[in-house]
Length: 388
Image 1: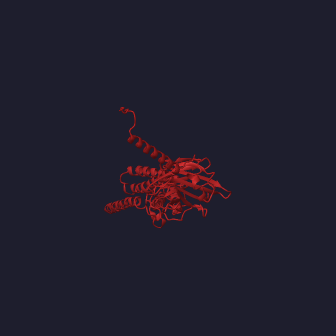
Image 2: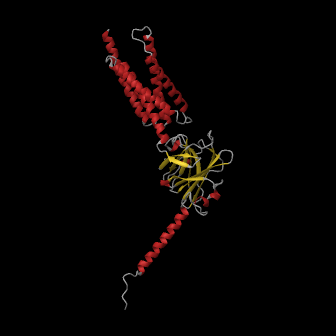
Image 3: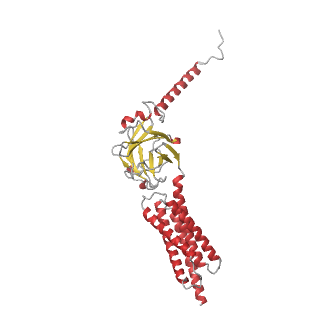
């Protein structure tokens, strides 16, 4: 009887190797069927496999990896002479919706988006346009938005565990291009969309796109930060420091000359911050509800602030005959500026959909300020009464 060599594989080991090879083969086949890429030339996988279901030509679209971590691929192109743009968003089917939004300033709130999701075992799902008015489902109603979608071209196709969201719209921009910022989002898996209202996304990303070159750059902080800087600067300068400066001049005059330098310093810093905030605001979009009144009040506050600066530079001596009239002018213009600034802070918070948190905080700040003013006014009245 010949001894078995220690190097010869056992029958059990051979069967395990065969099973492993079969698993690897099946896995590679499955990956080839579900994969999509900008460099794929296959006619049986990726976009080519579903292009017959899309009602417009997809053969010459510009392609780039839109959101690598989520496997998003975006294809786009301009077709015809009527400024019509074609888009196809490709993404893995994670059981939730996929969407791409178009924004002029990088902000999700206020933008228009196209979202799609599957409804069962069929290869065609649901695709709709949405106006992203806030972060709650009720603020994202279906079939609304600023995109002029071409009828009959918006659809979602599911193929081999991948979703293809296709649509066309006519760009209304003066440069005949879509809005420069794209916002991608993935919905939670298995979420129920009541009456097709979108629920809050599971994850999102944004990018600025140069449609001429097909180059995209992440802008998760770009225009979004412009809006935040506008709110922070204008709110702090006009809405906080300006009322504080008025209070310093009103209630601390007995601490001379401290009150004067404190008043001038606080108002000066507030004016600079507020002016920078207004400048940042002009870079933001103005087609959201309430933006016109917000801009008008902002410009009014800026004008009042400039008038106060001019009044400071042209301040007459205390013994001058016109000093009394100057005081009236300075006091009432300052109060008008504070009133407009406070109202505009609340309007701005409402436009930014921060009415529940920051508005409450600012309201508490104002309530404390009013209460302190009442107490200090009583002290002033008692002091004036006792002096007489």
